[in-house]
Image (cartoon, helix red, strand yellow):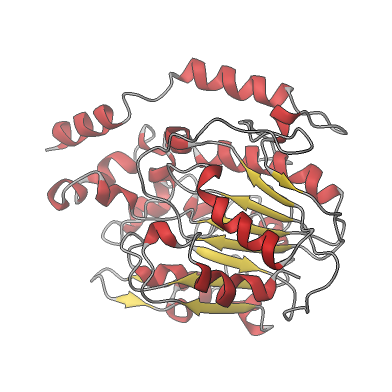
Length: 357
């Protein structure tokens, strides 16, 4: 069984670039980034005009995209000659991102100011991060909605780790996205809105039948398995000890295992102005769907809500503190499938648009 599962994993990722190819591409894209001026390639964005308004750090995240790698159309230039391109970025130390970008959240999440602000002439910049096997092209509808309701907003869709490159280790991706976000935030001292389309989903169920999935912990909790993003956030409730000892990403950012950066990361997370969590029972991929609100299984696969989770009770990364100060909003939406979160107009108007100050 173990060998069969390994072969399936190997065939699934057989088309991925070699380690050398990924390293060379990563290094080349890093060299393209300048501290003061980013070239069109290094920007790795699609930017929609308007001036940047200063504001507090704010974060909005959507549920992730478990679909086959997308073949985006040719990347057209906008009126200012900025193209969507691929690139990568390094943050200030391992996993240390600008405040509020510390934790890769599992679902549609929005970190914002204390209360919705009325429409006005200019708005805080918006940064959009795609999910697993996705690309910036999927967010064209969201871009249209923002430009229509908040004209003049500077919107940046990061075009990094697209398609199968989203399987690369999450620490590499965190560092890359951190470096891409840093120059944008440098021009917005009071902060930005960061919209992230799911960074934590049970995508493995799309690849393997239940009989094999029950043995995936043997792969994911191995040094080899931890070289892939889907294993970096794989949490098997039936093998919690292995998860806590072997997870090189999720257990660390959740503060479930002691490490030297825990205090600094928690402090960064608590700089978030407001966290809006968005999800629903018809997602079809997020498992359990309540994990969109930090719920999760116990060892009997009974769903425990956020307030019953150890990471909340221990306040290991600041979740309890954030809720106590009224900075967490849960926005459940039924009738929306996983791949429709970022294109559904009703969801945008209900759960996202009111908070884009």
